[in-house]
Figure 1 (cartoon, rainbow, N blue to C red):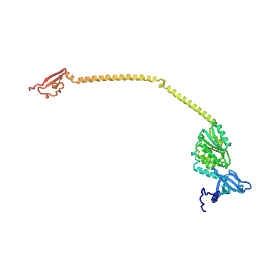
Figure 2: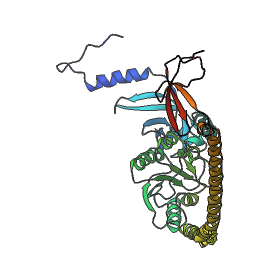
Figure 3: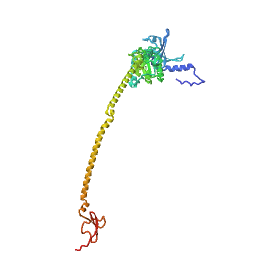
Figure 4: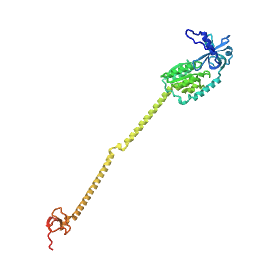
Length: 410
């Protein structure tokens, strides 16, 4: 195929040329299998072609379909808006209107068994990623300031949640966002409401509420995009979808699963009468505990006051006073006896010294001779020591006399 000449403002292509080239390029595309949810089924009587709109359940994306009217009417079960289908077709470009559609040659309704099988596969995938892990779940506040509620308009679920919650705790406030809870628009609008409530700083907990229904009706709450949106919320999410047997995947991802919308209302706020009774019980217990403590401490103080040291503080001192006086007298007696004994010893020692001293010896007629005339002259101990003419000092009992050594004539 030859390359077309480039276009310019002076040499533009006409619309038909562009449409033909787009048609030629799309005609080269092969057939594909596509899954989605029907949002429009138009099969007019007498027309050979039926027009359908297939929507992605998790995104705001739609695709037009064309199919033989006989095939659409002959499908069992009959095709209706909201049905999940798998179609086989080839992209087709309508030259006259410049629109793209999928020319379908086979339509297969997705049965309940296939839907359940896909939900189980998604359950295994999300579980492997840890979205069901109890460790990541957060506990809602015991008394939320404001409760975000996502449910359908004027539904029984909204009535049950609001009525039961306000009867349990009249001061509770709700910020309600009404969205479809089934059909093609459910998942995108619920995700938008979830994001808005999660960003609201006043909302402390978010409740997803819906009444019971078939597997197809509850299918949006097993959608992968919604499950991941709930897991990404920073605000705790309570799931109250259907009745007790209904367990869509969002129940496992949410922080709290409630069996019914009524059960969700009981889980998000406490019961005022129960809390009042519990508070009264705590006050009575505190009153009894305080009185018991006061009585116990009063008895302890009374016991301390009955002790002798506090009942008669001077009694022990008086009792010890006589003992101190007795011990003082005994100490005085012992001290005096010791002094008398020491005095006698001194007298005995004095007498002994007097009897043995040089003065007593001199008094008996003895004398001490010193070699020299000085008082401190050495004592003469031998007659051979002095020489003739040496001075001597003779000490007697009553004084001292001086002498001179004479010459020995012999």
